[in-house]
Amino acid sequence: MELSILAALNAARQARKGSLLATYLATGRSEVLIEGDTWPEGLREAAEKALRTGKSGTVDIEGASVFLNVHLPPPRVVAIGAVHITQALARLAPVVGYDLTIIDPRTAFATPERFEGVDLVADWPEDVLPQRPLDAYTALAAVTHDPKIDDFALAEGLRRGCFYVGALGSRKTHAKRLERLAALGLSETQLSGIRAPIGLDIGASSPEEIALAIMAEIVQAFRRRALSGDAA
Image (cartoon, rainbow, N blue to C red):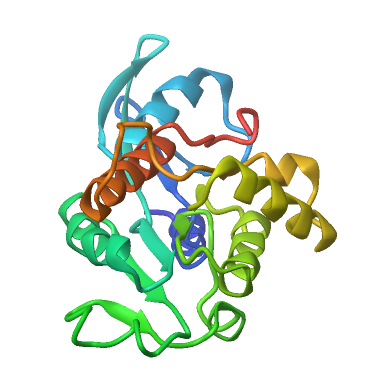
């Protein structure tokens, strides 16, 4: 492998960006496609499909066999709030391949006994997230109902380009939330990216069902995310 290709793949990995190495089997010529860049027209459709599914394989591009080798950062969920919903989310997220971190400054809720084996941080989001930054391979779910805890994390999720940003609460609660976040400098376009009420509409009632609805919406957002610079 050429050093320039290896350097490009390593840079993408360190930046937690998806990348793809396309190798033309007849000639051995290779090129790297990085998520968010503008891609060659002939490769775009096949590359987007490979990156969305995370599956490597050989495809036919204009009569040539091309092997697409996919490299994806592990997706993760950052949940704001150590509540009953996140207890269920902690069981669901690993099942579908997502790392989970829970952040909540309320030490009465954020206890190791309630979240055994979970990456749990009992601190304020504004103190945690600068040290553990959000990114395009992170889903941010805010479920405390407390603006003092949720708002900073939501704003940070939008600014950092998280592939999913969702918040618990009624439409009336969300309308007030949008006013607060707009006052923090978030644009109307950014604010339109918040999923609220959070989760797919499956008629969820119990904390376990709400966690399922959230996880389903996160998976949907991940599989349908924009990839190339042209699609963004």
